[in-house]
Image (cartoon, rainbow, N blue to C red; front, side, top):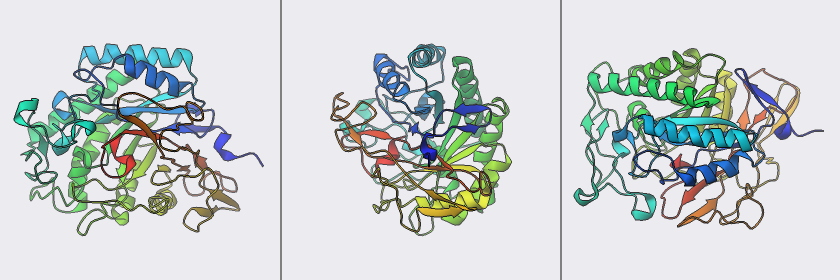
Length: 391
């Protein structure tokens, strides 16, 4: 039987040749948000790796929304022109379809690059003010964000839509929104970070209002034929935080406002949280989300073998067929997007495992495998937490 991993699939009007994707990987190598030759080389290689779907790293919608001084942005003509050059190159030499992950770092902004320590920037390191749903720092020693006003929310909402317009002008094939890893939209959703007592806080329905407004603003400028997705958190892995039940509720709401797919990650709401380390720890949450919402789903988290997984949580029956999560092998220092034993090799850059599977909606394509892309991720040495937290 032909593996579903190498069979075509369609997202909105976008046809993908196979179900292998390359995950967004923060490179921390931009100059004031502007991509350079590093991005040309890095993404050009991945565009020609055989994967059908390549998601560009978290790209920030405003200058003060960057995580670090080195993070990519799409908030100026210079940012747009530089990414245009990269995307043209990738489309010219490779076969992968390109998506861009749009993000705002919120209270995790104004930070050092991972190999500089990954903490909040000191006064000597040109920090900038941060915003969040509440005046709560990400962790000890982090900047205390200013409470976002409705004017801030309107500005950020417009910035996401404007960045999406730029992405379409550049020629990206899909757009993804970052709702995970403790950044602004995740922090707004999480009761660990959002302590507001107005209409933008309190219940989950109220905490979802602003993030859903962002989705509506982006969907309004992204044609329905262009896939629009989001990376969300399946669990905060902390008492009082977001739960898988919340992820399902959010997933249904995101589908209702026009999303085409969801990527399930988890953790990162506060500096103290540690995600599980067991194999495939997000897979049961992703499977439940897929089953209960009917939206296309992919997931991440310690999927580190090329062998089909037969654990009950990872092998599930869809209709009359059996779906097995699968991934492609990687090991630290050996990234098989480049070839066996070939290291990625920029200063302190190493390859790290991060296989990801996608699954289709309940009842869709019943009776055959419905796994969408396996993704891969690279992180810098010194980056804390789970390897999925950089993108």
